[in-house]
Length: 260
Image (cartoon, rainbow, N blue to C red):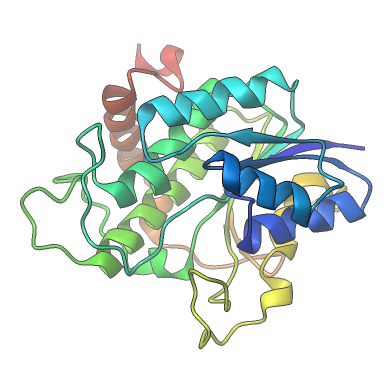
């Protein structure tokens, strides 16, 4: 039996991944952004062992989630599923950050840095990452004309690069990014064409499976198979720059030794 933490698991793909893992006999800790959502999660999946509460929009909330997760004990895997979508308007958080960047990029970065390192990390990305801009200029969209779809694509490229960076710096950890497909969740919308039932399978499989294909690292996967990713995902310059930017914004270095 493995212990897995799934962020953004009060509903949608996060809850689906968690349910698959509970049904397989694993211990799963859920995450919800507030107490009301936490109660919904408990009712939806009573077999979960706990629910960690914290809003990943703010640095304080991110740290609250990290503290709450660590208090439950060490995990074998963490699935970084929480995200906001491509139809978001530009919102500035209490920390002065672009909402999409804060939730989709900085939150998984800070949780990776602060939660005791598991053996496996899974970052839920998107096929839209292939349209992402690898430039690290204007990460908070302060100078550019706002585009929700571009901000989302950029964020999913960055989180994929984060997965690849962890694979480089921590070779003992299996760290991968996943495209769940464009599925009809609340975020994806009712017209999404991909199979909802398949949307959560790869994340759960990567978190616990003993299959050789699930023990890879630094890959971008779709339906349990490595697929072509944006070439910038593996660019060491992008990885170094992204880690430095996130460290500056969060005050926490993910790989302090790597800075020397």
